[in-house]
Image (cartoon, rainbow, N blue to C red):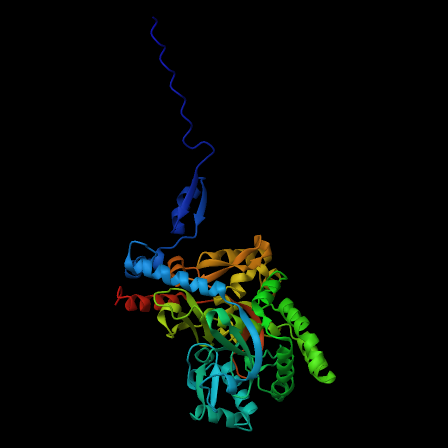
Length: 486
């Protein structure tokens, strides 16, 4: 039998067939040498977890989901519960009433403001302007200088809107006789409030307090709120979750763009309004809604507040339940750390300015409206509203990229809020403080820009990002509560 022929060795493939292609992770300078020798280099935007802080990285590891670890399993279970409550929320607009009659504990000389706690001495210009306007509106003083002395003299008590179950856009000033929308989330047992939106131009929320502003506020109190409240009671509650879902599919993100949502609300309320209000009042109310594309913003904020409060106070949870700005600081609340605020300096928004104004005129970011981002709307749902990116200085592709980045810091997708541009994928929902700090990806706010001086008002719109330090502070406090950090 002839011996078998030896096999011919297979010819090896060239090691660098097609040239050298490199993947660079981390320091950009590492790519210089291979690129100088003709290599194609793809650079990844990677940063060390927790910004390279070893001790904080260890804390993050202890707080990670782990079914075999008592802490990891506790955090996972708490977050699961928080997400279930957020997704199950069903915020309904049930009534419109007077703040003093509905906000428990609101005193006769109380003024509520946006963001974490701040005293008059540290308030920014637009917030001071709104305080002056509210004092004049309430009749506690008859001139701006007298109102300022009253505010500075300790005769007015200031507190965050969030401490009273309320939210306010921009300066967020809410006084006892102002009308508020009342939103109930029955599945979560929560109730939230917000003022009625004043429209654009010179408005109190941007710190303007001229006679024009005060006259509009009084008309809203004496005519708009009673007429809308009466119509609402006649037709029954408005399902705000359903309305928001429709608006997202019509090009809104329900923070900076509310054209579709306001139109849908006007359609819902109009029949009852014309049946219950005198003809001239109904006509004026409908004209006001037609001219105010932002009317739905305050409803969206109250709905978001009622939704996120349902997930607040769950021991061990790292889900963020509030983000707010007072024009000096950004404050974050996390479910597992109770009512504590974790703050960092507020950034100046990056955006477009009205003619004659620029970044030097801008006040740092301001307002409770970031509660919409906390609930997965606004900046997190930017892909639903390509038109908004032109308003704040970007392209439609930027909106999609932004929403996709927000998926990396959230725990769920809200399938009730489908985004057409993403194949009706649900909005990013349940910001996880661990993922924010671990990745360095900051939640994005769509926001207006107020002039830094009192009395001038809005000068532009743009985006801002929540500082990482807020989330890191919340996680450190949670670590102390769980006895895995000092």
